[in-house]
Amino acid sequence: MANTFRALWVVENDSSHYEQSIVERNIGDLPEHPLLIKVSYSSLNYKDALSAHGHKGVTRQYPHTPGIDAAGTVVSDSSDTFQPGDKVIVTGYDLGMNTAGGLAEYIRIPATWAVPCPDSMTLRESMIYGTAGLTAALCINKLLQAGAQPEDGDVAVTGATGGVGSLAIAILARLGFSVAALTGKLEAAERLTGLGATKVIDRNSLDELTDKALAKPQWGHAIDCLGGDYLFSLVKSLNYGGSVAACGLASAPDFKGSVIPFILRNVNLLGVDSVELPLEVKAGIWEQLSQDYKVEKLGSMAEEISLEQVPQYLDQIHNGHALGRYLVKM
Ligand SMILES: NC(=O)c1ccc[n+]([C@@H]2O[C@H](COP(=O)([O-])OP(=O)(O)OC[C@H]3O[C@@H](n4cnc5c(N)ncnc54)[C@H](OP(=O)(O)O)[C@@H]3O)[C@@H](O)[C@H]2O)c1
Image 1: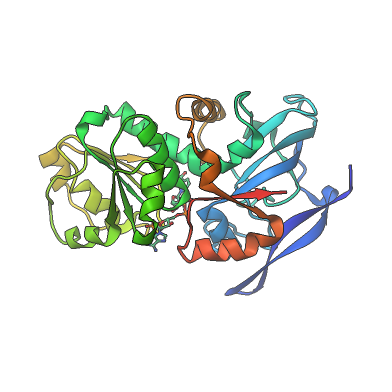
Image 2: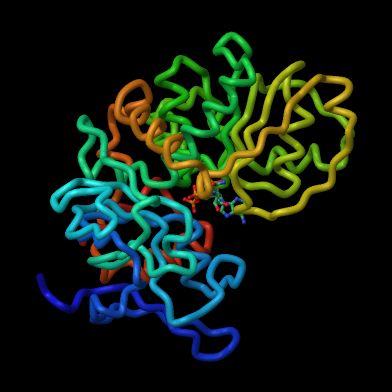
């Protein structure tokens, strides 16, 4: 095994300027945790773009290697949880936040952060899903637990062309739901219907609802990646008894709301977190993604890029230009 490896490296030059480059690092400089993994694939998520652009709510200290996702092969594990050669998936917890992340050829982490890659899934497939797929599945499970059924009406998905949105559309369609994709990129309509959306709607149409206490009911349920007033516009346009799974803040973290939709329409606002989820729950979701929720055209949902291309793509994601999933081959 080599002593050095390539990694994305983000340096803070002054309080407002962060520079990304690919550097050689020493394996000995990785954090002192028991599980050393040779990374085969990583993926790009919105949070990686935030980390690479100096958002202190994600990463407090620089220089830093982002990457909240990694899939690879165990090199060694002093906790004896895994054997050398085991294929594992790591998402969330502190990976890529304040612990050197998956946009590198090696990571060293607590063994309690890794799950075995399901037998019926390749490492490559696991990273096409990545945190985005895990989160899409969690949102759908929350809706199902709240009683969602295909007969309830369209499920609205915001941030439709992004990672979570695209995978949520594909899985919902597989489960027999009709999906309304809300997007700021109407030029991507064909791509969205190809994933399984039955309607493609300009997300700006939600803006008209911002100042209303209640809007015409139009969605059975919803999955929201945007937060801000988009989220509450969805809440007030749900059919009676509908639910919104809220997982993101690509637009904004806060919104103006009232209790009116909750007490007149009996609707539910459901929170979704993929980061601190107990490991056994994560393992169960990965099994679902490899079987009941398996996306048929998964390969066509991702663009494969190299580590060298990561800085350019993280800039695009940071600017809201994400389109589907970005798979990083090490
Ligand atoms: N809760 C969790 O555990 C969890 C896990 C994963 C992700 N997330 C969050 O979920 C959100 C989506 O993640 P992702 O990985 O899917 O991100 P992504 O791939 O970057 O996609 C985000 C999408 O949101 C829309 N968008 C971006 N900026 C926007 C803006 N300023 N205003 C309105 N729409 C905007 C765009 O879609 P359109 O152009 O199609 O509208 C974009 O493609 C992020 O906020 C992320 O932090 C949370």
